[in-house]
Length: 120
Image (tube, rainbow, N blue to C red; front, side, top):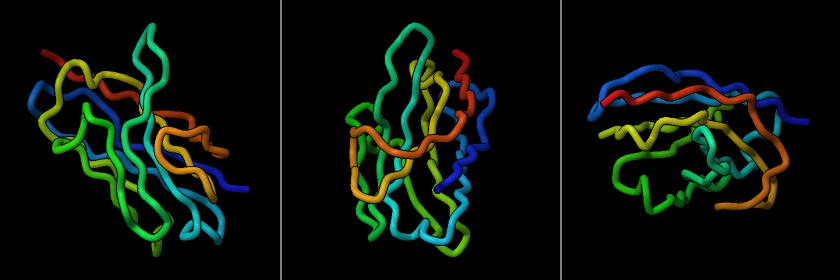
């Protein structure tokens, strides 16, 4: 069983930056592929970025070059550094984890979400 807790969301102006964190419980975090998804009001949840347990990352076209996913297995934490934020990045951001799934897939474990609001 893995529990995920996101933090770091908030209100930021267009062009600003935020760093989201996702703290995971469990001793096998380092073996999990991790991902970030987001859901804006009235829209379906969409994939943002993923990182394999071994390190390689994958990004949605809409965030590539602006967002960076990383992980620190010693802290059981995955991060999402978001730069050059746009109003269309406004959403609830969710952390997800799975032993085998990667990319825009259906992950086994999910956090409760953290709100990111980008003002114009």
